[in-house]
Length: 280
Ligand SMILES: Nc1ncnc2c1ncn2[C@@H]1O[C@H](COP(=O)(O)OP(=O)(O)OP(=O)(O)O)[C@@H](O)[C@H]1O
Ligand SMILES: [Mg+2]
Image (cartoon, rainbow, N blue to C red; front, side):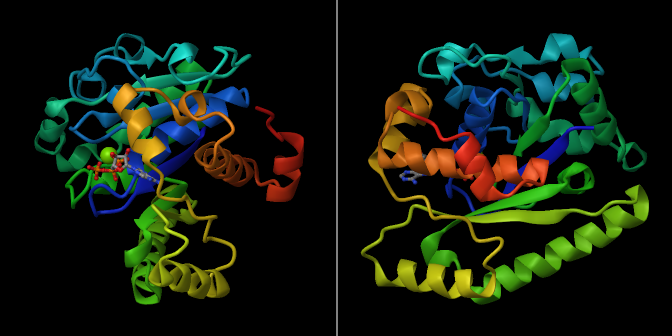
């Protein structure tokens, strides 16, 4: 089964959808076959990848429509600067307002339905990784998502990155992992904590990041700077790789992509960076 990375934070607007599609685009450019599942009824993943919003997830999970009719293959020209992604691909299971209804339609005994969907998605599309975008807030569907997740990528704004907050998140995720291990024989982990919208001249941001990096050197990823290019590229429905080649955002985008690749393959980050050093 493909590795499943869930991009999460209960707070809204921290950059979950941005990170999801950026990492998917980067991995596809590295030759990976990437599945993206949007579990947010706002449908932002489809918007950012410039494809039509659709009931894909609802249709596949609840209406049991064949996956081939629910999944959208994203044209490379929507996210890769020269359209050339080699063997890499992005397959999106998009979301729409109907996604709201999933918890009401999915009864208790169907907790494994989402797990089966992930298996089918992996097999039918020969996926290397699945990246899940999640909605803000608590959701009844959360338990299904936890069940399928191998690694969580916790995206946070820098003001809110506190030691206590991270400890709490780690405790919650350890509990999830324990339950998953009991049912499936394997747990889940925090793949990374990604500080987003960092302003290097803001003391509080610098303080939070250096304090946390000292305590959790393995899981705090390089911060992504606050740059208007992210919002501008989203507005144009272009990936950051197309919108800002060679810019600092572009470097931040490659850094998060390389880290996800290192996590999914178990390889050393330094090795991945050297092997996949990307030229503009
Ligand atoms: N590093 C950044 N610098 C500047 N703007 C950013 C950055 N990262 C994300 N943004 C912008 O912040 C806004 C929110 O981002 P995004 O939609 O990815 O957040 P989200 O966590 O998915 O939100 P929601 O909780 O509503 O799903 C968008 O306009 C996006 O372009
Ligand atoms: Mg979002």
